[in-house]
Image (cartoon, rainbow, N blue to C red; front, side):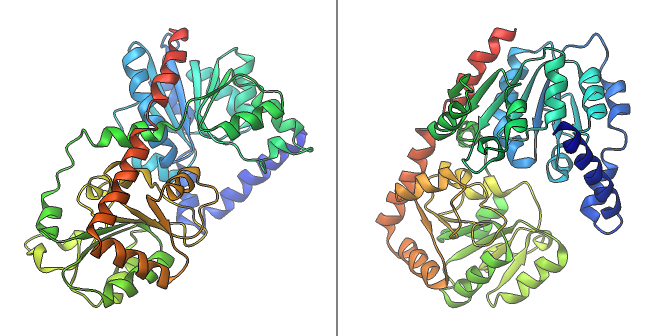
Length: 412
C-alpha cells in the first residue's frame, strides 16, 4: 500500500505542476515550494534546537496560535519552525513574528520527508487538527521525534475507521499523544486501539477569548456605525450575499451593514457593490469620505474582521449556505453576538452546540433570514439574551492550551 500511496503522490505532484500554467493559485502552490530546502539550510544550523508546528492553512494556524505563543515562552531557547500546506495560510502569515522559520510543507514523498526532518531536526513536532502525511510521520518516527496532535477532530467516515484503512491507521500509530476536541473523537480512536488520548477541547476558544483583552479600536468603523444597530456579515460567499443583499435592499436606512467577503477580487467586490441599492462605500475608497452617510460598508481587504466584530450587534457568518464550509463562528461569539449562519453545519460541532443553546440560528432561505434578522433587530431583550449565550459558550470552553502545555513541559 505504501508503494501505491507514493505512486499517487508523484502523480499528484505532476498534475499540480501542469495545473500551475492554468491556475494562479496552483502557480503559487508550486513556486512557494521551489526553494524550501535551500531556505531551511540557511535558517537552521545543525546546532539549533527546534520545535516544528504544521498547519494546513490559516484556520489551523489560528487554532494552533495559543499553543505556539506558550511554546515561545516555555522553550525560549528553541527556534520555532512553522509550515503550511496551503497558500492561503502561508501567504498571509509568512512574516509572522510568532515563528523563526516559516515555510511551505513539501509534498509528501519519502525523499522530501526525510530531507525536511533532517534539516529541521525538531525536538518535537505538532500537527494542528488534522493533516496526516504518512511519509512525514514515518520519517519523524524513524528519528524518535515525539509527534503530537492538538485540537484533533475525528469523524466516523474518515479512512482510519474503515475496514480498508489499515495502512493509514499505521500513520496514526506514530503519534505519541492526541489532544482532541471531544469525546466522540476519543471513542473513535479507542475503537482502533489508540489510547494515548486526552480530551483537551478546542484551542480556538483560547485564541478568540484573548481577543477581548486586546485593543479592538477601529475609528473608521465607529465613524460609520455611530449609534445605529450594526449587522456584520463576515467571510461571505456569493450564496450568502444573495440573501443578505435582498434583505439590505428592503430594510430601514437606520440599520448599518458591514460585509467582509471571503474573496476580495476587485470584479467580485464591484459586482457586490452594484447589487446594493443603498448608499455603499468600500474600505479601499473610504478616505476623505463622511462614513456616517453610508448604510453599507464593504471591507475589500483582509485582517480586520475580528476587530470589526467588536462593533457588531448581530453577526452573520458565511460559508454554510454553499459547499465551501462554515467560517469561524467563535470570533463573533466571544464578543457576545447572536449569530446567523447558513444551513450546512453538520461538520462543525461548535455551531451545532451553540445552535442547541439558542445562541446561533441556522437559516435555509431568504424567509428564514428575514424572520430571524427582524427579530434580532427589533427585540432588544432577545438580542442581548442570545448574545450572552454566545459569550458564555466561549468562556466556558477555554483552557485547552494549558492542558496541552502541561504535557509539553515533559520535553523540556
